[in-house]
Image 1 (tube, helix red, strand yellow):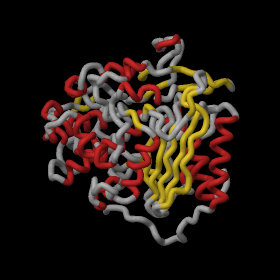
Image 2 (spheres, rainbow, N blue to C red; image 1 turned 120 degrees about the vertical axis):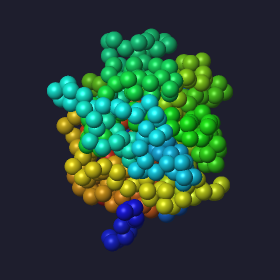
Image 3 (tube, rainbow, N blue to C red; image 1 turned 30 degrees about the vertical axis):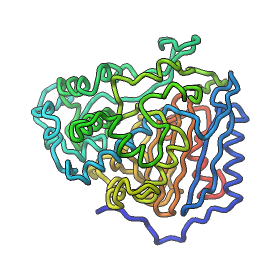
Image 4 (cartoon, helix red, strand yellow; image 1 turned 45 degrees about the vertical axis):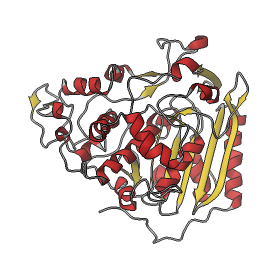
Length: 416
């Protein structure tokens, strides 16, 4: 059943006092030195309640943070890929119960490696619902980790973010190379029987190319970015825009340190690997347009991107009942299930108690976040660039504040 907004409780009314507290909290987090800069936007029932930028996109050059600053949005790419996939579903190209090897013949005949090292047939075929919810069986998780002494150097001597060694080799070459590598290895678990955050969205990017006959960058531009007016979103940064890119920082032992100031020449080049799992750059202004479209169930000022049914379908629970959502070891997302590339609050409780039922969200490795709350007709979106910022929302303990959680507590409950 496709989840609809829960209207059984009194509608949330966000007062101007709560909005003022939100601004104070965000500005204070920058002022106390936890972040170089932060942006935040809150919209409810079509009314813009808050849209701010505090601090700097680069502290060392005193370049101010703005709502058109360009961010590496990392895994905040994934919900955009979900919308692209749902566009193709509306056109009849695929459905959730279809076998993945219908679209990727290289995956036909994949075995599963057991704990004992034996290779066995899957208990069930890998279906598109498994691919859309990180339950496909792929065994190498993908995440971005903070630089360490072994990290490569970025221009200016700063250390650059790197992929974990377990996943870096997957992403050499192009999308076909990724498919070939995955097809050469047995699955780590039976499809549908576990949640393991991994390369599923990159595989979806490959399917988008095969079904549409277009490269992923062109499909996203023509079917999502241009219709929504997302002129600053893409897999690379146009040369005339590189001055707007935010630097990445870390906060450790009470010190904020710049890890990476992006190289204008490198980020202006079209990458060979178009990562549907984390390759996009975007701005707060652009992502706000994307969130508003989701809150409006596919509608936008320039015309529909999706049907309302498709957006509601994105937040249906795709996992088997015994499977739970865990990205950071030892922390299960409370009250959360997983839909089409997004987590969904099906039972508000614990750390997620304040959100309205059916709220859905995801975030990026460097701290970009959003949530859509259809019950309270609300969306919020925030952006920072800090190491491990995305894993923090998923249970990782860090020294700096969780801006997503604090923002939600203030908006829903009046105080953090």
